[in-house]
Image (cartoon, rainbow, N blue to C red; front, side, top):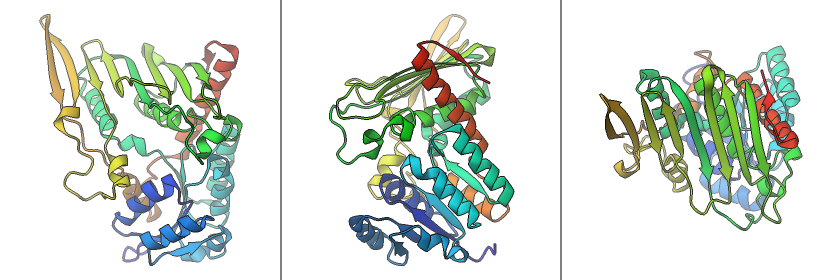
Length: 358
């Protein structure tokens, strides 16, 4: 497409994902624009129009697909069980598509999306924005530099504390069979990060629990992944942690890195801030991680300044991919591996034991 024209983007869904993540990131990316927003809720339609006065506000997805020549990208930010159908509709309409994680609710559905995308030669990517978290970028850099020596273990957590279900929250009111629960939601982020760092796991063990009344999906889940070269990753996602643990704990033969607190970008977006500000993706020094190493038996512990978080990189790469200038930011093939790990985790929880994979 011509470089002097912006990537015209239609966002389907204007809940948390659409309104707080996709729309502001797209609007703040050079040569991209929010051209249309689809939502059935009258209140969200009014909010979308106020946020983007020049965008077309639609109540039906057909309004986008019947006018396919007016859009260069579709973003699917709807409940998980609608992802495949909307992704396929975009592909069949010939419009490149970004689908929020998880890209679908089964590996069979992911494979359908892969096959359709390949056959139609239409670009597809998955919004795994946590690849651009400040702490994850810092861990990648530490591993690439070999500062911890051979990695043996990693702990990764998304823990919160909320005894009552969120009113109107589909993630909690939807069963795992329909894509609900923490394993599909926050778990897909943490699994994806582990796969980026260590490749395909050989074994999966999981404890998937549903503890709170009124919640349909899992809300307290643990997953252990065993990778080649004896690397072990432990993942926790829970809504029942009155005292949370470290976000990351990375252990190597020659050192360890521990990081508390969450990447600041989500809260910044919710507060109305946008990429481009000098402080975007940066955190206070009090939140920096700690690196522990030993020299001649003497222990050293230092603060490690976190790499700036950069969610904006996702849509910059997607824009360039649409223009034929590089690959999509997150290949859907990566999402297929993630989905197979989620399915293996569910199988492990059923048999109460480890499951071999890949």
